Image (cartoon, rainbow, N blue to C red; front, top):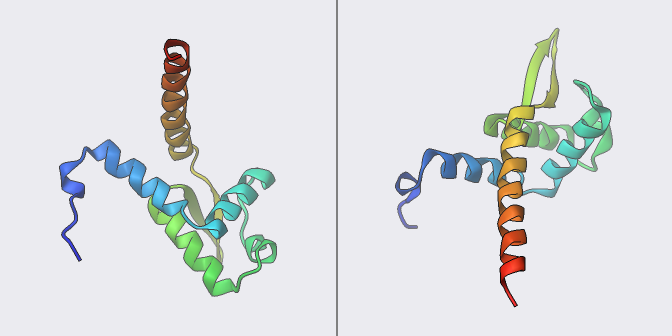
Length: 110
């Protein structure tokens, strides 16, 4: 296995790659969609929404939290999760820049 070349890229490139890597599993996409749908911090309801065992859901939540896509607050014996809006906005801005570039290119191309 080759050495990682992530040091050759900017901090912004590495941050975006971390965010996208965290989104690279369908269960994590489903978790993000669910958190957006309920629009509030939730504690244990996620397990009931996915066809996965509780330890598997916990691992996916951990990956999303480590990447900074969700936030978790300890309340009693459980952790309540919600969307980390600032990092979702970074992803949104990334795709907006691509979309704007494509719109400009579309007008210039045959």
